[in-house]
Image (tube, rainbow, N blue to C red; front, side):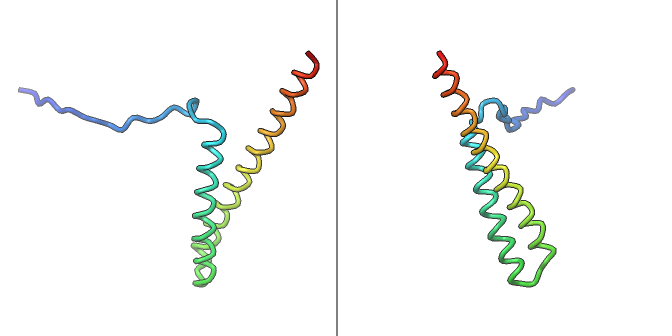
Length: 85
């Protein structure tokens, strides 16, 4: 005799449905939290906490800057294409 098991797993969200501004906000939040953890680790002389947290913060903030740069470039490109028509 078998057992019936109802399994309710969390559904993942497809990456195609997220917008660039949502990604930028998530990266800003993660970057800000990592900066706070990195500064607290530095002040407590715990470099094993401070350095990885600051590295993650730098990567997140560079990602935000890259997204903003790409967004500005795409706006310029669409304006250029609309102006030619």
